[in-house]
Image 1 (cartoon, rainbow, N blue to C red):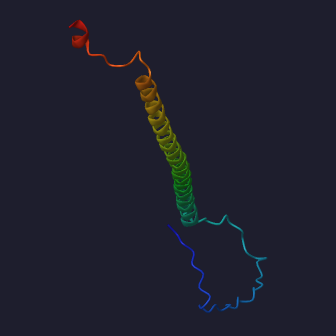
Image 2 (cartoon, rainbow, N blue to C red):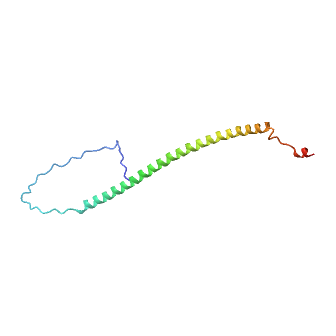
Image 3 (spheres, rainbow, N blue to C red):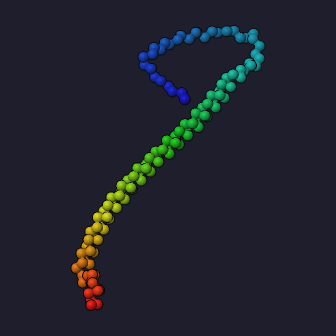
Length: 122
């Protein structure tokens, strides 16, 4: 992976370019110039590296987006768990109050009074 670093402390010098020379090419016979394969190979290699870097960058971007989505999902689930815990505690408290109320009603009602069946038979 290539990283570009900016170093302000480094000194840069401008190199002078040589003045273009004018040559007389009037008597020269023009033949097709042989082109070097090296620039084409270098360009192909650079294109392959660029394509590979692009694929790698797309994969990293996809993974980052997936991680962010999973983080949001986890946050949502955590909030849901907290809400369910709170609701559960509320319902337990209400159940205790209702249980105590029912127990008080039953103890006050003659229908639910315990009777000793052995003493009635005698």
